[in-house]
Image (tube, rainbow, N blue to C red; front, side):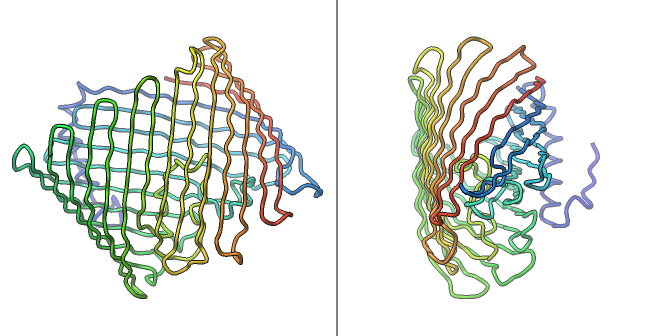
Length: 446
């Protein structure tokens, strides 16, 4: 295999790391390919929708009833081996609006990751990419395409580790992230970090980690919001057969290009458990971010597009979030119950008028009538608050739906969906209700 490392990226560091990625891949492929396991699923779908209030206007105003036709494709692929893993999960769709309630546009969503190396190898390399839509205004969520833009985050992180004995390991890592906004170019940025890590294996199921990190964030169009951050974090982790958890505590010092330095405490808690048909996920975190990276494209708080600040101004912020997810598949022999609840809060260091918080609750019930026919119903409630009364309007929303899904054969599926969305804003003119009925055809390729 020949390598051409010229022109891989305009950024020297990213070019160098991409070359390492190709080199490591060529060295490890021959050792791991024979032992690899993989699965792949591709889908093509067409979904005509009948929408009774396409622009989401409040009661008393003239509504636009139109047909919206969505068509697209999705791809899921997972490949694992002893020393590497590839995970791909993307969806691409395009929507046409019969009465031009929105401009015809595309919707891209998903993520992918590549990992080379494992917990015992002296090297570890990870490459990640994600793309999500970010809402500009949460009160106009009906017009998803016109009211949002894409944010792409690409990250690469090589790591080298040295194990001194059975219990002690030292590691050094460098990470580079590129954050790219579709329209708000002033929020696009680059993040470069160097990490020093010490790991102590206290027992076969318990470990203790100390991480020291130095980060530099540079915005593409202006250096007034650039900043450096020094942080230290201590982590304690336990991994049992049926559950695992980690506890984190740390301190971060932010030194902006303009303004005074700030110091903030951080913490983290994660708990995962699987037993007796129950799968739990619990997390709580307080971390330092900025108006560019935001949540890092985390999709836990979003069903389609997330608000995540939605600010055109650049600033550092303190993110506090809590989430709980539950999946239970033994409620009966034919049904499953999925529920989640969460809250996230953004507190800006300087632009406090952009502070916001969002709380959501989501529950979904699935019943399998036969091997081919199943029904699903769900309710999702979201509450968005802005402490500054002069800023954006507070809002509440409820999205409920009922769906019938029928598999004609293993490669073809049809579904009928009715969806109702209600929104209540602090301004009476912002209240709205939208009902949508759709019929979808999906072709699967495995």
